[in-house]
Image (cartoon, rainbow, N blue to C red; front, side, top):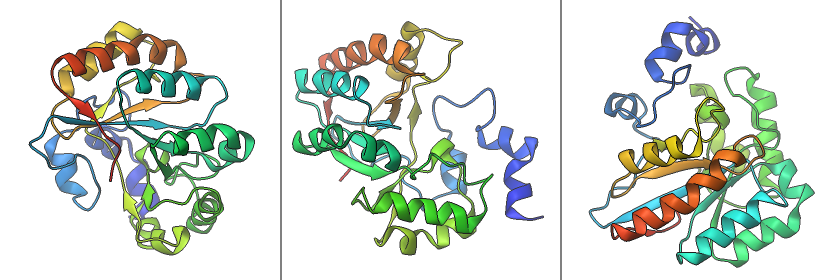
Length: 227
């Protein structure tokens, strides 16, 4: 079976937790299947690694940055290349305020549905605007042949960053309170948590992010970007 057919099969989607419903807390066995990808940072210190996908955005990114600043928090923004081109001032503000950035492709492509040459060319185009060795595949979907060619596409020794906790802020079937509870239940030392810097997720992000930052700060956690 080809990579494309393997990864698109309903059974595999369910096994990997990438169909519906999705995993909020990434199970240990998924990390074992793809051990070379960064799912969680190994640390015993009370550190949380917040990440935000899909920006920058002229209204949502400033909201995120303002909330992070209130808690002296650093985060990692996995940016879409075309959005960096559209909103360079927002991208620069992310960098100026001490956060890290990562490549999230130029057009938010699904690696399982995109031929390898087109997918890798899209990553290369994003890398012209996003100078980072960090890469997060949109939807978490990238096949083995694309992984093998990733370093050439990005011009770096690329690191694929996944997640330990998926906030679900993109899920229109839940509200901000449910997002907050999910994150607080799943978060622990070294957790990489995914939120989204986009319009679809904003109704839930704006209600959950301030509460998550406050609650985890009160528990003694600090927030750092992925090194």
